Each structure stands twice: as structure tokens, then as C-alpha cells.
Length: 384
Image 1 (cartoon, rainbow, N blue to C red):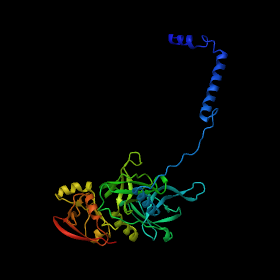
Image 2 (tube, one colour):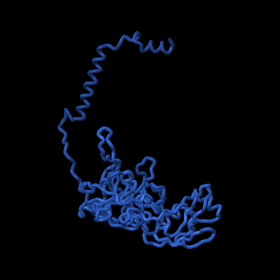
Image 3 (spheres, helix red, strand yellow):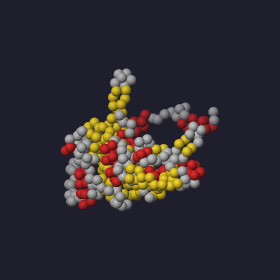
Image 4 (cartoon, rainbow, N blue to C red):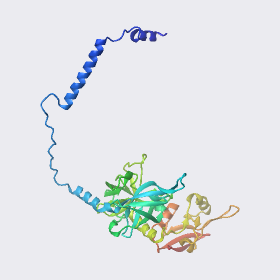
């Protein structure tokens, strides 16, 4: 046995301690009882004069200030246009072999027109076998996917709802926005419907990457809190006009950290009519890839963007543009090199996609093209 153990036993061990006298134990118990009773009397006011416990008089607040009135009115007018979207996915029950639709996620959206079109983010409905749209009055309708553009993270649904329940938002402009303008986001974060957050335009001209890995240009950055479930909801200006579709946040935790992004309404107003009319975005049908083409362009000593592929039947195919061919012996026959789009020089795939994305259906797009040692101008018409 060590010295430490011996000293411990000598001081605290059972052999060295005959135990606490019974009288002391009783005294401690009584002290605890009466002490606790005294605390109880102190808390509940026992033993003295009755204490008056009445509700305090309410101090009149006075009028709300003008900014509060404005925000309340803006939310009251526009919240009926914001919807709650449930993403459903079909599941097969292993035992019964019955197929059921299981909620996979939720998001936000808004009424686009009185015919029942609903705008949201593509990633809100991506992978869904079905979807449901709940209006502000909590009526739920089955939704049908009309069209989607993954490159812009936009999708259009349709519901068969009475026209008097469909209240489209007023559409504004994003080209004339200024940093510092007030903005208002309405959505369903974390499944909490009809939630309002406010902030300002904190930056303009941002670029984010879509779910298809394409760049979305001129994105609006805001410090209005945007959390999971806000995706697809509207970003409004102080006039209550739609200026963007909330689409993403920048946050290590997945919750709002004061940096949110919205697809600008000018892009939305260009894409959505095409999705309603054609079910898809009418694109030129050109495929670019900087990594694939860098070595080829260096060998040709040509500046521009190499056309890697041309989709059959696309506007680019009808305009006679040529893609790059890889032969059986792995030798490469370069395609056209686009050097200018609408008199704007291009040096990368991102620039080419951005410039082509400015054109609408029916527009004529002039292209300056290098082909087999010479340059020429080719006009491409965007049509379905």
C-alpha cells in the first residue's frame, strides 16, 4: 500500500471514522426543511400582508412610423401571390407493392399570371415525380411542370386554380437597380409559410453557377435573410415590384449569413415566356469547352471560342455552323471559331454563353467566325 493510500485511509477510511452522530444528522435534516420552507414563503408571499398582483396598465404606443406602415402594406398586398411548393417523389412499398408519393423537399414560388402559371427555381422541383402548390389561403393544388431552364435555375409550373385566387406580382426591372436600395423577400424558410425578411441590394453584377454548371450572370446580391425554403420566392423592391427570384445563399452552415443571391427579373422576364410557350429555352445549340479547345486554338494561333459541337436541328445547325470532329484515328478536325457575337469579342465559353443569352426568340444574331483560315460573318436566327 502506498503512502498516499495510507494517508487517505487514515483520514477518510471507514476504520478511522466512526461515522456521523445521529443528532447531527437530524439537525441537518431539520435545517434543510425549514430553510426550504422559508424560501417557499419568500417566493409565494406567505406570512405577510397580501401582495397586489394586477396586470400593468398598457402604455399607448401611438402611430406606427411611415417605414413600418409601408412594409406592412407591401407584405399585405404581395404575400397572397407567394406560394408554398412541395416536391414529391414516387416510392414503391416493398411489402404492399403500392406506389406512394413522398414529400422530398419544399420551396417557394409566386404567381406569374392569372392562367395558373407559377414561377420557382429549377432546383426546387428537380427530381420530382410530382409537385403540389399551396396558395396563401392554404388551398393545395396538384401542379404540372410546364418547362424548365436548369442553366438559369428557373422552372414554370401550372395549377388549375380559380382566377380569383391567382394574384400575379407586378414585374419590375433589374437593369436600373442601385446598391443600397431596400428589398423585401417573401417565402417559406424551413417550412414556415408567408415569412418576410428585409434588407438592401448589397451588390450587383454577381455571377453564380447554376445546377447545370453554367454561369448565371448579373445576379443580385442581398443581405435580406434567405434560408432553405426561400428558394424560388420573390425579391421585391420598395414599390412591391418583382426584381428577382431568390435562388441561393453563401453560408458554411446552410443558413442565412447575410449573403443571398437572386436571379434578376430581366432574365426571368426573358426566360419564363419561352418556357410557357415552348416548354424549354430556345437556345442556339452551340457547345463550348475551354479546356478541350485551349490546345487546338493555340495550335491554330487563333483567338476566340472553338465550337465543340452543334446540336442537330438547332438554330446554329440551320445557320451552317460547324462543330469539331474527332476521327477514328483520334485526329481532330477543328470546327468554327467564334470571334465575335453581336460585334462583341469573345475569349471564353462563359463569355459566349453570356452574350448569346441576351438574345430572344426571333432575334438575328450576327457572328464573326474563323473557318479554315479565313473569317466570315454568319447570321443565326433564334427560333424554335
